[in-house]
Length: 327
Image (cartoon, rainbow, N blue to C red; front, side):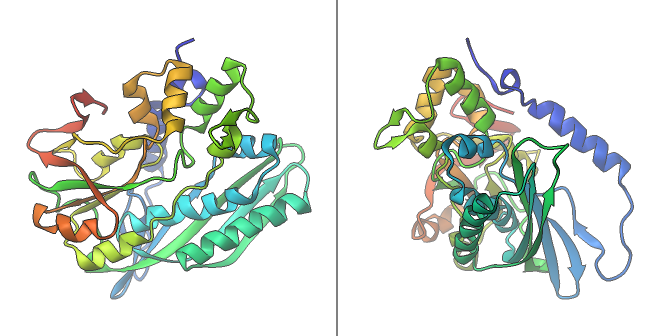
């Protein structure tokens, strides 16, 4: 069977339309202190005088099903911090704190303890405090459990990075991902399950399940890059993958002509599921978890922090991986 994300059960376009519907209905905005100054980006920002307070929310998705099968839960806590903190970083804000939400069919203290250890490790990496949270028992509503979080950060209002300064001639640089992160797991799981393989089957020096559970990287080096470089745009490669570049600008052409080499897990999924190259770059980070867009003269400074040149911004429109248009 030839797989794609929609056949696996996730229709990105339908999800985007649903978000559009929500935003078209929920229009009320606060007046005075706390009124919004950025909406519909990686994070929203509200006005707090000299500074903006950035806020974002996300969960770890169906990676949980792999964790349940493997009975390994710790890394989910790191993932929960990562998916939220990375979105804060993607507008140039420094993360401050977060809260978590764990909904369970039946409370399991051992699972909560393991997730909490991961949350603590993620908070240490991100230099944030878990200031609270909620644990819900939803016996009649949920099978297993779900994990999500909400994080806040701060940024000077004149330092918010939205991508509006991106211009043709800018260079696209990438920070390597740690693997599959938290997006595309539904497709990855369906491919593994349909092949007759088990999460316990060997994959290099790990099992397939252990590889899929590798925690998402938390890209704190982005703060150093922002301090040292004139950054025009930032992109956290999550759901929708490289189409996310269009959040920055719609009227330029993004060309990734020298993509980083994807980790073996991506090649494995692509071959096992006969997944098109186009679908892979629309679904997964493909080894590039965070993108930085800046002028060519800033490239050498960004390289000191591990960023690699992968492409450029050109006249035109669209998102391209080499000659493959993905948007």
